[in-house]
Each structure stands twice: as C-alpha cells, then as structure tokens.
Length: 287
Image (cartoon, rainbow, N blue to C red; front, side):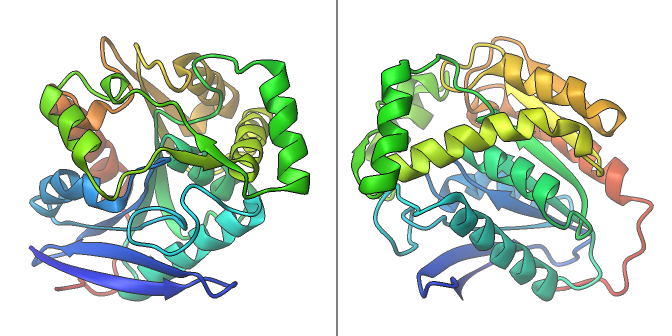
C-alpha cells in the first residue's frame, strides 16, 4: 500500500487537500466524502482494509475542514459544495481511468453524495454507499433555529456557531472518542449558511429519491443520536429497487468506528465487489 497526498484548486481558488491510498493491484476505487467537522485522515483504517482487498481509497478534505483551506465549517452555498464534490470525482477518474468507482458519503458527506448522484451525472459511478446520512437530524431542531439559520445565511452566511456534537455519540469505542477529541484537525464549527443549505438539501434528497438511477447501499446505526436512521430507511424505500437498506442494530453514528466495525466493512466490501465485478476495466491501475 502506498499513500500520497494531492491538492485540488476549487473554482473560487480555495485549496482543497486530499489523500490517496493505493494497493499494488487496483481492481476498483472507493471515493470517500467525509462528515461535518472531521477529515479524510480519520479513514486510514478503512483505507487499509480496502487496500488489502485491491480497492484504492481516496478522499478530499472538504473546504473549511481538515487540511483544506477555508473558514472552519463554512461554505457560502450548496452549489459550492457540489462543485467541490465534482472536482473530487474528476480527480478520482483522472487518477484511475477505466476503473469502477464507488462513491461513499458519511453523515454530511452522505447528504452531499446523495444530492450529487440525484442532481448531477451519476455515470462515473458503479454505485454509492450512504452511511448515517444527514437526510434529517435525529432530533428536530427548534423552528426558530432553522429560521435563524435561513436569515443569517442571507445576511451573514459566515456566522459560525458550535455544532454541539458530543463525541460519545460517535462510537461505543472509548479509544475512538478520545482520538476524536484529541485530533487537532477535527473542529466543532458550522456556519449559518452551511447548516441551512445542508439541512434543506437533506429534505430535497428525500423528496427526489425516486430519481435514483444507480445502485446504492444505504446504511445506518440504529441508535444514532445525530442523524435519523428512519430518514435513511425512508430514502431507501422511496428509491425502490436501486437501493438496499442495512440497519446496524445497537450501533451509533459511526458504525465503521464501532467495536464491531469488521462486520460493517465486510458488508460494504461484499456489496462493492458485487457491484463492480461485472464491469470492464480498461487497464489495471498500479501504484
């Protein structure tokens, strides 16, 4: 396995930084889109698991996250976020031409991926995995907070508050919780603009789930206190035959960081292999 870093310049000049993990023989690609406040480096163990199974893994830190530039937790609007995902997709297709790509999004990243494959070209992908997706929050925020977010996104979009996330709600593994709390690249910020536009986009994806035209694995922990497992099931139900729903009983927001993560990764890998095995590869990509 080799690890290399890359940089992408967004349309507005923001520098986005990412990491690519490449096995000796590449049969497929997993493109990661991470969640709010975190960064792609938290998926090192996921990359190691899939590299051992001939799957290259790469992902870009979102603007205002991790090693990428930008005000922490802020994006001016949703179009900017979609444009950033597009650049990440183009980077993956350029690095691995002809190799089947599965796009994966966790939490806010799931929101972005769901909207991207519904609103934009889904042809680059053999399928998608949506993990603990922010379609709806697990709790309904007070109406005044939503109204305030909408107001502030119009008059002061960069107005930033704490996201009030409790790290204990991420995983049942105390080591994961400690690592999250001690990680200097993790932050707890979200701007009025980012909150309001992502919040609205989650509902849009639910309303338009029947437009889905590629295979999608929708997964969620049953005791997630951050994003709604019921909303993920609603998305899968509305999407119909293209969607498969997997609930992880007794798991919180990050099943891939749970003490039982091995069975989660095995599930994802089986689904990925099934949905890429029949696809033609022009040339195997090597590190």
